Structure formats: C-alpha cells, structure tokens
Length: 309
Length: 313
Image (cartoon, rainbow over all chains, first blue to last red; front, side, top):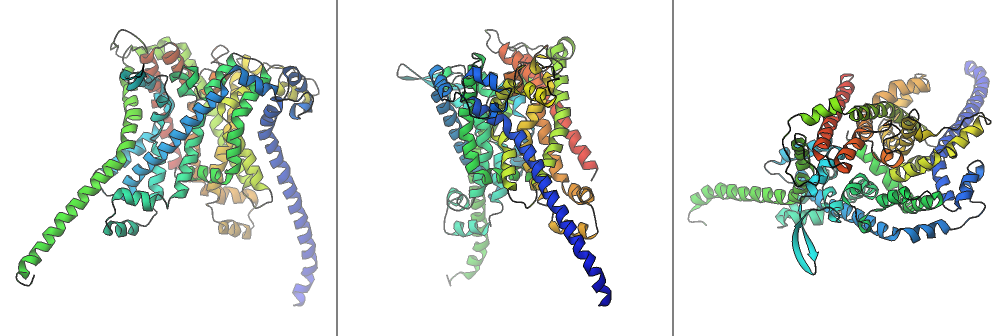
C-alpha cells in the first residue's frame, strides 16, 4: 500500500500531459483533414461560383480569393445562355431515360439471373456461374470499337411513314444506349451472393404450398433483399449517368445525345467559360444532391463492391 | 388400400422417384428461363463482341464500306508494332500513366482511409467531402480542370501566389512535358475517394482487440500499422490494385476532352488510339487488333499482380 501511494502522484501528471498530447494530436488531425477537404472541394466551389459570373470577371477573379466567392456581378445569365443555345432539357431527358431504364431493367434481369444461380439446382448451373464470372475480366474499353461495328448490323424495327418496317443498324437510337448495359456480370454476382444468405427453408415451405419458382422469387426473395437492390442500383446508376465513350460513337443525332456528350460538343464550340461552367454545374448538382441525401447507402454500396476481390 | 399392401409399398419409391425427376426437371426449366434474359444479353453484347474483335483483327474491315472484309493475316499486328509509331507511343503513355497512378492513388486512398477511420466528431463529413469528386462525372472534371490548367488559369495563379510572383506561368496541357502529369493529377483527384472507401471497409474488418493487444504491448502507432493493419488489409489491397490498374489502362475520357492526344502525341493512350483508328478513321479491323493487344496486356498485368500478391502470403 505504501509502495503504491508514492508513484501515484507523478502518474496523475503523466496522465495530464498524455491528455494534452492527445488533444494536440486531435487538433492536428482536424488540420490535416481540413487541408485535404479544401483540396477536394476547391475546384467544385470554383465551378459553381464561376457559373454565376460574367466571363471577364471570372478571368479577373482568378488572381484573388474572389475566385471562390460569389461576389461582384452575380446572376443566372450563364444558365439562361446555355438553355438558349443548346437543348439541355432534351439532353437531360435522354440521360434520365437511359439511366432509369438501364438501372431498372438491370435490377430485374440481373436479380432473376442471380436467383437462378444461387437458389435453384439445375444442370449446368456451375458452368454458367463460372462463365459469367469469367466475363468480369473483359474491360468495356476493349470491346467498345468492335461493338460499334456489331450494333451497326443488328436488326431493328423502325416507323417509317406510319408503317413498322424491318431494318438494320442500331446507331442513333435509344436502345443502343440501354440494351447492351442491362445485363451485368458483377450485379448478377452480387445478387447471387446476397440471395444465398436467405434461408432456403423458406423456398421449401413455399414449394409445399404450391408456389412456382417465379412466385418464390417475387414474393419471398425480392422483398427480403432490399439492401442488395439498393447496392446494385447505386453501383449501376453512376456509370449509366456518366456514359461517354459509347454514346460518343453510336449517337450522332443531337436529339438523342445524353448530357455528357452534349456537354462535350457545347464545350468544343464554345469558349465562353461562364456558360460552360453553368452547364457543368447544371449536370453535377442533381447527382450531388442525390449523393448527399443517400450518402450512407452510397458509401456502404461501394464498400460492398470491394468485399469480394 | 388394404387389398394389395405389397404393390403399394413397391409403388411408393418409384412414384417418389418420378416426382423427384419432374421437380428436378421443372427446376432446370425455371433456372434456364430465369437466367435466359441476362444470358442472351451477355452473349449478344459481351461474348460476340469479344469474338468479333478477335475475328476482325485479322481483316481489313471498315466501319462503313461497300466491300466485304478481306482476311489479311497478321498484317494489323505487324502494322501496330512495326509501322505505327503513334501506337507504340500510346502504349508507352498508357503504361506510364498506370505506373504513376496505381501506387499513388492506392497509397493516397489508404492514407485518407486511415485518417477517417476513427471515432471523431465530424469525421463522416470529411468522408463525404473526400468522396464528392467520385460522384462528379469525369467529363465535368476534365472540362473544369482544363479551365484551371490554362496559362492564365487558377493553378498558375495559385502557384504564383505561393511563390510570391517568382513563378513562370506554364501552359500545362499544351506542353508535351507537363500534359500527361497534369492529367495524372486530376485523375487521382477524381478517383481516390472511391478507393478510400474500399480501404476503409477493409480497415473495419480488422478486430479492435488486435489493436488493444498491440497497445498493451506498447506498440507505437507505426508498429500497429505495419504489424496489425497492413497484414489485415491484404485481400483489400489485391482488389484495390487490380481495379485501379484496369481503370488506369482504360484511360480515355480525360484525353478526349482535354488534349485529343496532343501535344505531339504526348497524351495519346491505347483506347484513345483505338477509337481514333476504328471510329474516326473507320479502320475497324486495325482498331480490333489494337483492342485485342490491349485486352491481352490487361490480362497479363492483372495475372502478374495476382501472382505477386499471392506469393507473399
């Protein structure tokens, strides 16, 4: 007892210095993180702020902190300018249509495939599973150019003077922007993985009650798999909205262009930076808002995509 | 029922067997039916294009041509390696880009993940901020940075302020020496948040007890990292390396928006060259050969990475 009484006093002092060191460490952490935060945010702040200024002022403000502040001659003129020059609303509509259909149809098609691969026992299942996983190693960029050739020969139906006609070539259509991206090996894989965690006793009980496999999929497995659907939706939403290389090659008609390609054409024809910044802000804001609202789901989806390497 | 018990008993297994068969049969049909939509789409838009790339690479096919494609043997491959300096330069640029981006982006992503992997007030806000460039389209990012890289743009003005006016403005994207490094910087800026999240999910699989035990033994934060964190991150590391490598080798958008491969070919990449040849100049056969070379290169590099990271286990 007497032995422990003496070292007690200096220990308190050590605790105090330890606490102070921790506090300094914590403040240092905040400083470092804020530094990185500025690094990641300043270009976007610059973009939004510049979209509100006339061109002459943007170039003048570059040399001062005013580049990041909505000061001076602030207006929405650049936005009106964009709408006056190009059919942005049409581009937006095209992108939303393509994205919604690609993601929506993808959820149905890929979840059915994941169901067939994880919950049904059938001949050839393992071979098909292996083949689908093998397709994961093909980066889209390697087949993009040959695929332009391929889709330019695919049969299609066209309306000509009120008559439905049979024709060749998918170039300059909506379907060429949607159909090739519906089936996705990685989505199938994520669905299969998630579905296999749902107890199979549920299926057996439903089978005894006479339910078909499709009913089991629709009434039991799908309602229990909300997180898997959210993950796949988020992971397929961003690439669909951001498509660039593919529509650049297969869509020449202005009326069918998605926002990203429309923006690149606008940018090439135009060096009015204020308007360009207005356009980029216009297509960044909706995604940014969706992200901020669902940020928890976004982050956990990305994390889920990395769990299986 | 009571009349012929023997036959009833004998019948039972056979009936059960046939019922089993039809259930099996039905299950197979159900399985095939449910996988058919995805299967057909994957065959149409993945398997056939791959085979087509292979087949076309031995022909002189053109995108729009009255003449049918003619078999030309290995001419396209000989041309790529022997008679097309722009292809070789593009391959070199792509390789250089990946060589810098892969380690820097993976390392910076890990650093950020370690930074935000703690219980501190406001740490979620920082995670969100670091991730914001990822949800910004790379086309938008490329246009925005092109603006900032101008001679009288934000980057030059910023460095000028930092050096008290001693800085000579650089025309980043019009200078062969700085164009590719400039693209490297913005590419890492845009994508690093994605890999921060992947690393973070890896970090969170490491049990807290291991750190407690290490601290008990008086291990410094650095020792904790090398002896607890890093070994626990091995599976994550493989995933991060392979995904960054494949993405880096596919570099296209930044080049198309910012430099069109210039100045003097210093930012041309394999995919950009394939698109230029196959789409703009309509030489699909030659572009298919380039795509095939690219695919084989990606495959080899991914396999080498797998092998290297596996051997250390």
